[in-house]
Amino acid sequence: MILILKTGATDEQIAHVIARVKDLGMQAHPSRGTYRTIIGIIGDETKLREEPLRAIPGVEEVVPVLPPYKLASLEAHPDPSVIDVSGVKVGGGNLAMIAGPCSVEDEDRMYRIAEQVRAAGANIFRGGAFKPRTSPYAFQGLGVAGLKLLREVGDRYGMPVVTEVTDVRCVDVVAEYADMIQIGARNMQNFVLLTEVGRTQRPVLLKRGMSATVTDLLMSAEYVLSQGNSNVVLCERGVKGFDPATRNLFDVAAVPLVHSLSHLPIIVDPSHATGRPDLIPSCAMAGIAAGADGVHIEVHDCPEVAKSDGPQALLPAQYEELMVQLKSLAELLGKTVSPLPEAFA
Ligand code: PEP
Ligand code: MN
Image (cartoon, rainbow, N blue to C red; front, side):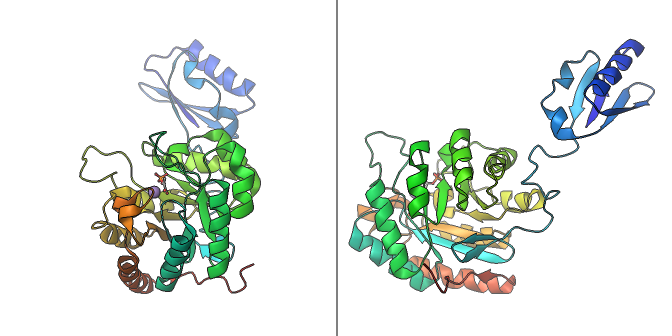
């Protein structure tokens, strides 16, 4: 931590700042310039972070040396983390191809979509049983019945499944049926939910909040990691933009940015980022080209009757075509689309 003092800070103020730093158990190394004095603080920065140092008279600015997230940082873990989702590896050159409908729907449809996305090369099946909807009158999901159906379909096709949890009261039941728990954009900063999901030790798919900075996203990951659950995969799904032409603004730069700051894998979700099937393939390719560790895409065999997000769903045939392109790009980049687990229990 570095303290930059105000121009004209008095000797008494400087002495007081140094005394205050020593009281906190740290060493203070002042450096007096012609106009300003700066004070380097040596010691555990995490202990200092919560101290109101800027409130000490004479202090103008407090400059941290380390990022505020500790466990998520590259300093803590210089190699990329590889997250194991019931046998499907994500990160470190292994790509997750998550696909499925927005919501878990009726049984026949779920089996049909799973079979099609699996044949195209998807390695994790998705579907929301608890849906976070803007309107309380919109379809809210099938709940526990949806979780059970998703599990059955996953088992039938040997695919791990990911589904969203929206409420702390449902964390245990979601952890019971899902291989990976999704925290949606709207709950990215639901800190109680993050803590509870952290306790389960299940892999977590943490989606970026629509108004969240990359630092906010990494701080939310830190909540999960701080519970001893190191299985976090981040997801860039677009942030609020000003142009209604796309549902959100796809922040592809977040992918290499996260990789420069953290060891955690990050995948992209061009479905929610664009809301437009015609733009999804290019954005999926852009995400992988930017270094993403996977792609999350909504697929529905009859979008016009989908219970949620139908207008942004790819048809199975469109998904298949995209997967051909994604696989050749992966090969070009020396990455592997993770194979399905051999012995999926
Ligand atoms: C979803 O995955 O269906 C979803 C609701 O995503 P997000 O939280 O990114 O909006
Ligand atoms: Mn959706």
